[in-house]
Length: 126
Image 1 (cartoon, rainbow, N blue to C red):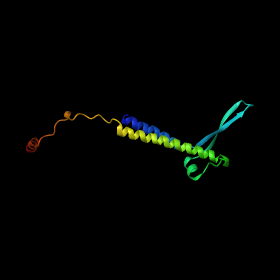
Image 2 (cartoon, rainbow, N blue to C red):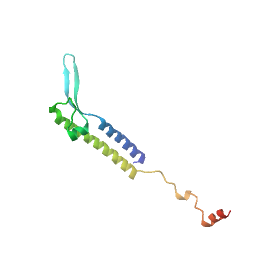
Image 3 (cartoon, helix red, strand yellow):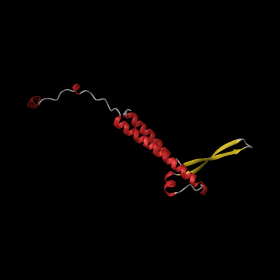
Image 4 (cartoon, helix red, strand yellow):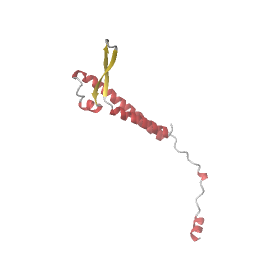
C-alpha cells in the first residue's frame, strides 16, 4: 500500500464515519399498503441521535414507549458501524504511514562531496 492510498482511505472512511455519526437512528417498521390506490410505502421510525439514546435513554418525542427497545438495538448497530468505519480509517492510515512506500530517495553518490578543510581554508583566505 502506498502512503497516499492509505491517507486517501483514511479520509474516505473517516468521512463515512462522520456522516454516519451525524445521521439519526432509524429502523424499518413495516409497509403501509393501500389496496384502493395500489400504493405501498415503507414506514421508518426515527429514534433520535446515537449518543443520547445509548447514554441517557433519550428518544425523539414521537417515539412510543414500546419502540424504545428496538430503537436501542438500532442505536447499538448504528454505533457499531461508526466504530467499524473509524477503525478501518485508523488502520488504513497507520498501515499507509508505517508500511507504505515513501518518496524515492536518491543515491548519495549523486550529490557532490562536501569540501575538505583545506578547500574551506582556501575559500576563507581568498
